[in-house]
Length: 325
Ligand SMILES: [Zn+2]
Image (cartoon, rainbow, N blue to C red; front, side, top):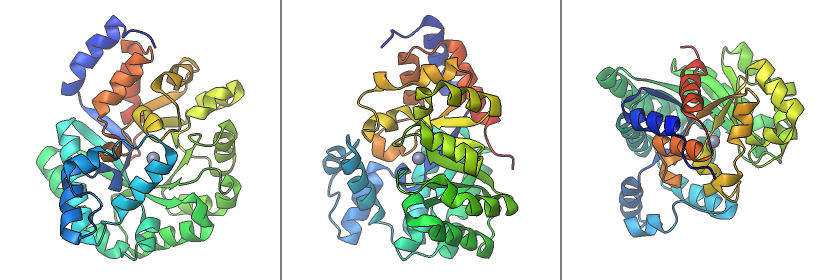
């Protein structure tokens, strides 16, 4: 890995004071260690009995450990009060890092699996985000998402929930989960409905699955932004296509190492993406589970050899890639 370039070091020094955008951030992944311990003691699951117990599992290090951690975190979600508390953790992080524009994934599909009611959770989250906005002047917008391996039916029910529970803060729809489970074309009808509903199409691809998963997503779903998408770097023609379309890649460098998607930061092809003219943004993905911050993400990009100019462009992309509204 390269030593940090002087212009990048200067930029990093100024970064805490700059306004930032973060477009790839999952609600449940923003839970703080303290909240996890408190919830765990209150609800009797005993899954995270102490801060040391959290630290032993965060960050996870392998795909299996990540999935187990994610599942255990979700086991504490019991209703609107818990989700509102996690949302308060999230906005505290945003304040601390001077993130003035955030887009947060909320998954009605996971709520449904947990037996929770999106119609009750949405107003509780709205209260937290509205108060945060009034206090800070920052903006939080919501991206609904579904889980790819649960199929188009589950995704359709997410859109049903959106129609049933209108929430003005919702601007986009995305797909997460196992990228290798079902092909993008299975969701083409869902994404047509996404557009009809006036939502922006987004998708997780090119993290676990190869460049084809990104190419297929572009072809069938026409996303305005791809979450991760870094495996596109393996296919020069695909890189040209991403640059031509102006599709943003919402990169999360620390996350990719923490989940085991990449063996080490040095393996991240972020510089290849930037050199190809692909518009990249930086986010933390699940800051509570990966013990990362947005500043750490920019530092990681600098360690990969990005210049001050590259970092400034990525910062700007965060605002340019934000959805209108
Ligand atoms: Zn993600």
